[in-house]
Amino acid sequence: MRMRCIPALLLLLGGCAADTIATLPPGTPSDEMAKRFGQPTQVWREKGGEVWEYAYGPQGTRTYIAGLDAEGRLISVAQVLDEAHFALVKPGEQPQEILRLLGRPGGEWTYPVIGERIWSYRYLEPATRPMYFNVHFDAGTGLVKTTSRSRDPSEEMPGMRLR
Image (tube, rainbow, N blue to C red; front, side, top):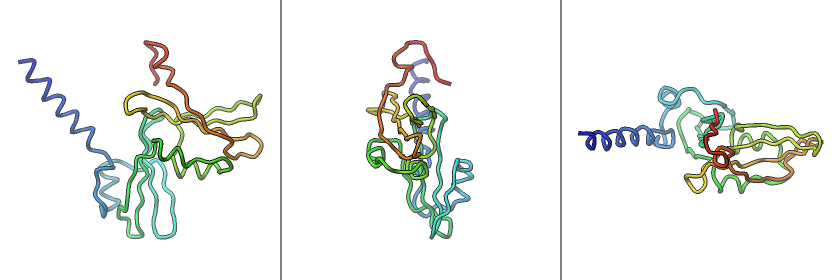
């Protein structure tokens, strides 16, 4: 009896995981998006439409950026915490550009001694191992100085859990 319940439970869990904003077809109205997935964590109004951020965190490994047209219908959606989007972060960019590209960070730290402010984004590499992509801002100019990657400390210390 137990063996039959486990596959059923896995099927149910798989169904939940598949129901993400990324499964919505183009043309989905914004009110339907908000009804199914809640209000976005950030909205940018742009010429010809809006961009909605769905950041699952603060230490989540997924952030979705959805583009909507002037009528409030979905044009496209992407999960942005991945290597392709990280590669777009370049020195000299402003914090607003990083927010628009990757969404809000899961953590933010200031290091006065080295003159940096760091935003960290938790992600999965290669699809199973938690890592952090870090954006280093120059404390003087406020612009991106460099980027780095670091392992999730909970992977280094057994028993440690992030909240």
